[in-house]
Image (cartoon, rainbow over all chains, first blue to last red):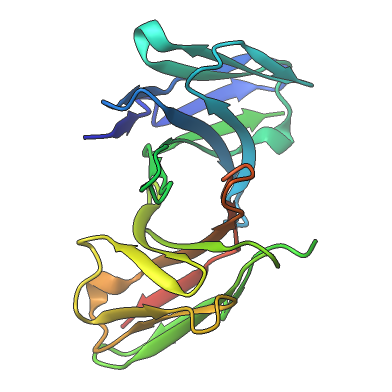
Length: 117
Length: 114
């Protein structure tokens, strides 16, 4: 069965600190996608990144970076120089990829990030 | 492109009443998904459409739930004889098959059953 674990329920940092959000996943599929979404207080899920299981290159986008390691089944997300606007709940998600797949997302329980001024 | 829209944004109902939610996906997106999110949890998959065909339903979708996408565009989710346990945020997402398959979410409909 597929499963996503975000062990950190809540993280609190002071502005400008770096913070890493952990994500560990389980799947028997060899082909899959991994995602991160942000859910600000307004409630709408905002897409941040998608990673294909064959692409283990780390990615950087501005202050955001992602570390994908298949050997440890982890897809961690780091925010550098955090800002108050980064305060939100962040979800890691997994979807299987196959001809018959619905590509439905399996979400972790989320990590609430609070960035204090 | 306009994003995914959902209506209403909030719904308060009494136990036993029927409710219907609407989702308008991003135009040209042929896949549409419904998820349910309860407080402090991640969204859980409910059902999936490719065009007008409903291809997958979660066991979370009891007999009281029904979803349609009659012309492959907007979708409706109806809950009959609502129960207090149905109180949740109902999220709709859409994606374009064969392109990125990335799901983009609407703002959600928050249902409160009294």
